Length: 407
Image 1 (cartoon, rainbow, N blue to C red):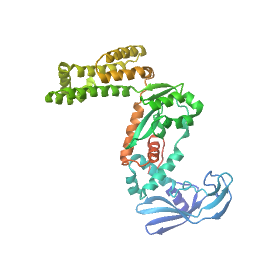
Image 2: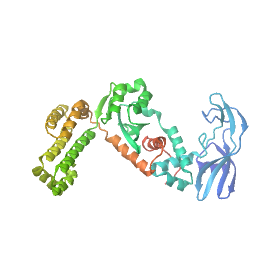
Image 3: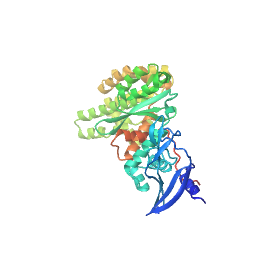
Image 4: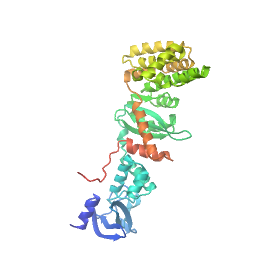
């Protein structure tokens, strides 16, 4: 078998000719050259005249056992009418990369599955090299078509570092993929997406699911006047759960009886759980609260009633149930629920939009959980840019084809 054929089979690169092979210590070095005769621009790939030969460069490939495979070639410089003076393109590697296409594909695939430290130990690469490979793969593979045909999107913030370091993550509800990641969590974090979409793209967006963050509301109202804002029902129910918890803490503070205060303090999960998920002990706790603490039991009933109102599928019945709940909460003499009733009354139409559209931010929250897993797997990220690349690599719909054995 010819050396060139062995090298092509090993690398998976067809337009390549191998002239020689040598061992250097434990390393295996193939001296190769492109199969095409006329050099090509490393930037745009068009054929260009070459005018000199540079020194020999080495490209790292995967290891064969303990032997690391290298490709050696002295590239030419070319004069491109579009890109100017560039180093010529080689078929086995990306421009400005010192690793072969197969190795970079494998690194990106492993980065979707494990932390960078494990990749560096497995492949013998540096931490910085793994990060640069991930950035190159994302820049090349992230599909610009993800901005086309957007109709329903959801936005939420993600805290990636202490001291209020946030990213804004935007998800396409229909394909369940991350389409935009930007630093910050205010109106400015969404402006870049809206500018990228342009006037025609912004007109196509019909629904936006967000929480009650003022910055997101302002950005959507200014840039997407035709889109309907849907407030996440689970966020509304979370606000009600927080109100129940605030009433419980207030009751604990006001009780002089230490044993009764300890009982109320330990009833948090019984008060917040759904009725069908209660254990026997928690049902007994609720029964005792019903007979001994009317204020706290009223808070529990208000929480359940709000959840029931948002379960309706008919907008008219949901509106009626929500109006009844607002009236009850306003006269409940529970300050946390009176405050919550004012908030819900302010955003009532956008909360009721969930009944008609049936969209929630559950997909976005699920993406946030997966992003949290990525961050924990890496033991945190120092820069937002590194985390952005990992988010797009794992959640942006990038398909990889690593050189793995077929069965």
